[in-house]
Image 1 (tube, rainbow, N blue to C red):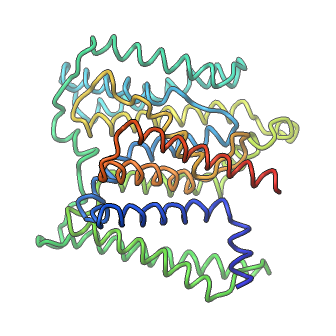
Image 2 (image 1 turned 60 degrees about the horizontal axis):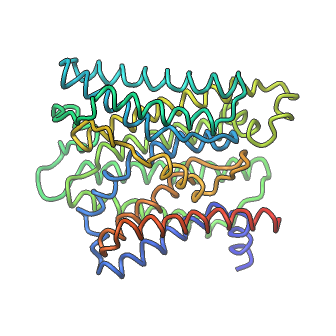
Length: 386
């Protein structure tokens, strides 16, 4: 029992939000009579929140460096408008329009990263200006009107599903096979990690606790995928988010760039003295965030099946809230990609659950604000206590 208490205490930030997600999900299961666990609703939950999770992945890197980006919602709208003009008005092939959209996102990141990293203007000011600039450019580009519809090939970015070439019945077999493969990979990685730690005489948790933790994780993954398989299978959006989680978790945990990002946010002066080119780190983090905002913009436009001037409104706040709820620190140097995803899921489950039980948009905003305040307050309390 003492081992469990120490494990939880040492990983309070990480496990606290996972427990909160489970409790919030359970609460809405009771309040909605289980509707939130229905296969169709779980699929909709992924489709409705995929672009927020993509934004959260980019935002967590920005916040770890001690900065913030208020412009991503406007960038989402601007990229969607560019895609609409290119594909609908100019008949540009979808693949070419998508490529151009990514280039535009990267250039936006270059523009903002330059002012922040090399000129030294605070990120709050630069991205606040960016929020106004790109929203204004969106209105100009669309002339205040919505463009629709997009071709089906473009819509599949947000509404597509993994094809089931192994079956044609009511159960999506390919999704189940992918879930089993993922489970085997996770089992291998967990025990290989444990073997490596023992080899170098690192302290490890008891074997039974490793087995219990892994069993709970695998049960949650396989149950979730089974529910998706009862509908249409795994959405393309989930595959995109999953790939981003793998890539960015690896970068932040296992690469020099990841360590430099944490060092820049933890103590910029010390990082400079140790030879880290912190300006370059901040610059590339904003370029990366621009590219991911472009991806989210394409997903959002595909989801709406239109390019609209109001697209992405307040999305930057959802992304920022997801990162802080997921355990990142406003001071920088702290945060994880998995934490940002969990924070995004907390926001998504709350939005979905409150809509199912008929809570108005006014109270939804107020409740989300309180959750954000409590999450950050909890972080400040633990830091002061430590």
